[in-house]
Image 1 (cartoon, helix red, strand yellow):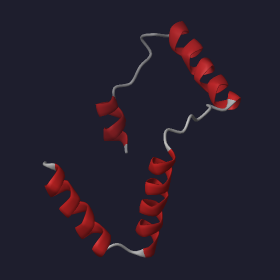
Image 2: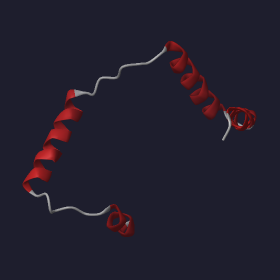
Image 3: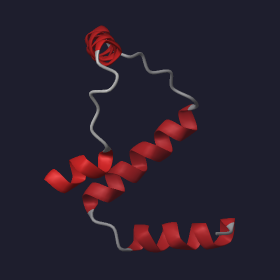
Image 4: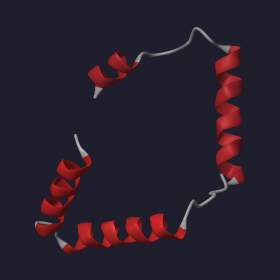
Length: 73
């Protein structure tokens, strides 16, 4: 998709957007204009990831494929 086509698509979406989408777009534009934001991963999240990695390393063959998971839902 060309830049021109992309702009047209975005503008069309904005023209038909509800208030919620407009607020999200506004936030996205403001964040983009401020420059890159460096987010810090919270310690509790790192701990969960470390725990899950330990479990995986203890049982590397105990995995379920994404296809199998989707079938159960």
